[in-house]
Length: 397
Image (cartoon, rainbow, N blue to C red):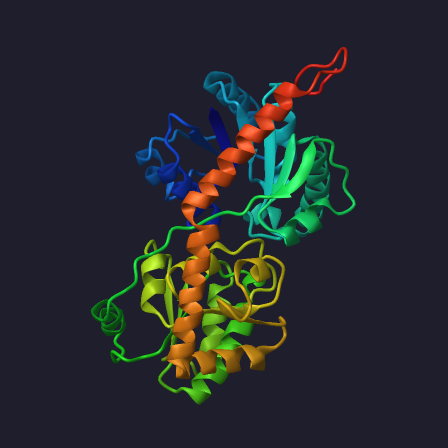
């Protein structure tokens, strides 16, 4: 079986981390996974995918779409792919149209309930924003209607993307992703991280991982940590990630008098190791699909305090692997964080339960099994279905 995944780029993110884990877990003679990137480049993790024997193609989706049309069609024809697995959200429609023309079955997987993600500067111009919104509506509508299978990474996302839209292919379903479990950190490793940051060895560390964009709610995050720091003065907040809002959040940190307590770590490739060395993961997001970082935190034995939003309520089991509050409950999230930092026995219990839950359901092996079952099930369905007279396998007359 040969499958081509279509993504923006191999950036540092949840989808890309999952793809790398699938490349490690699934033997290429069972399912050969290649990746096509439509962004400005293939991203910093592309070499890692190539080391795992995947072919990584660069096929930019420029405004005219003509270069993408020629390039993507050439890739499909030369690769003899059995399935295209499309992860492009608002840009899904055009690749679906091409795949159907080439008679390659296509799966569309949606990863979020909010599609106002960062995009090139020229798409942030006022008129272009409106055009992009209209394009996204038409593109997603077409992709959902014409894909052979529509999936989403959580029940919450599936409800949003399919609501009011006609689906002609197989019944939409949830495709839960998976993560690798980081080995527990030793006491020396935990102490070494704190020393490297210039902190005492017993410093309580709170971690957040995410791009600096509206949906990650960094303003709420800082408000929560302000209350935590007032109760636990020695606590520190580590922020991993980059994004267009980072300068404004840096200013907010200084305005709140937290300059000595908040550390901006930028992009990191050792996030699972960082998680294993911290005490708490804080995720007060406004929107989430299925937050891989929350799964990774639990896999590292780290309890999660976060917002009660679709996707996060499926990633974290409230009261068992973390504590979730309503989005605007800043004080409640702060109180839960304070409780877990002052009650290490409770924090360890939540972390241990989270780790067990990940290993049993969200682990890489289980996720790889679900993915292979999805592919084989779709291909079997398509082979067994009779074609209407005058219709080819792509459903085109």
